[in-house]
Amino acid sequence: MQPRVKLWVEKDGLLVFSDYRAELLDHIAKTGSISGGAERMGLSYRRAWGKIKEIEHNLGVRIVRSEVGGLGGGRTTLTTEGEELLARYRSFRAAAQSHVGRDFAEAFVRDG
Image (tube, rainbow, N blue to C red; front, side, top):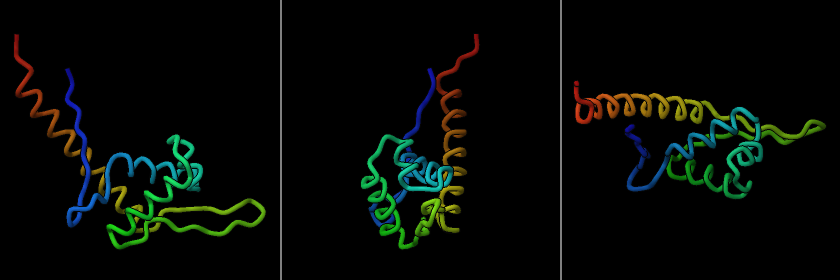
């Protein structure tokens, strides 16, 4: 048996971040585009863009910056706030998972 944890972060009762949203931002950062990030997650561009706008609205900060393309097309990057949000969430998630693993072992794993 292994414990699993589902985490999310709320602000004033509104969902602002979760594993799903972190994964989307990670894919956007790696591909340099919202459509690339959406494709990796099996989402439509519209749904991915909607999630980004929802995060930005609920947090009150911009998390992505898009540049209009030329010959090679446009590019989307995470803002400093977006990068920090993703890094802090990853750190929080790792710590939570570590604590859950420890507590699970104490509760379920028996010697012998």
